[in-house]
Image 1: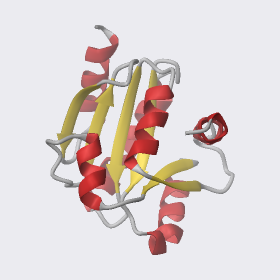
Image 2: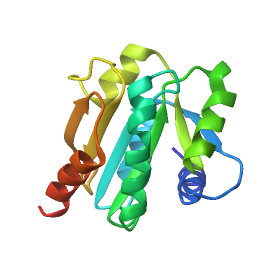
Image 3: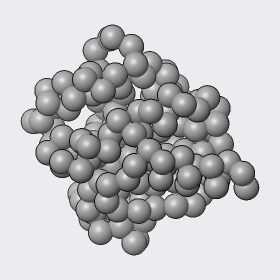
Image 4: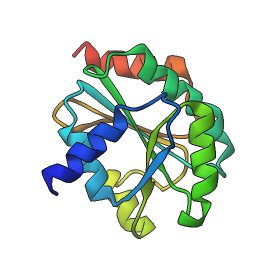
Length: 160
């Protein structure tokens, strides 16, 4: 993947919380994982979500809070929407309501996308993936999470 693509994505990711229009970038699992691996953060958190998923919507503020509580050199949260492209207006409205400027939009066949993230992932939403500084998967779970659970898992990785 080109450096220009990665630079553009990192630039968009830094704009969390601004009042500007929300950017939703379609990307394959391979593209998303490359951006995650290239991130200089010590811990990288990937949140798989969708606007039609009630537990996803309920837990979303915990991920926003997590990103706000840690310096971006320590923890970086990546949002990946599983919504369909025709649901982009709803995705953008939701991101704006949460103060989030950027999210990936899942692109590609479901099975291949799921397998790329973890062979243990059933594809259920919400799903959370934790990566270390080198981009190695260090934690994964399906289902709704809380802010306290996120902090506990992130702290375990930060304290390694």
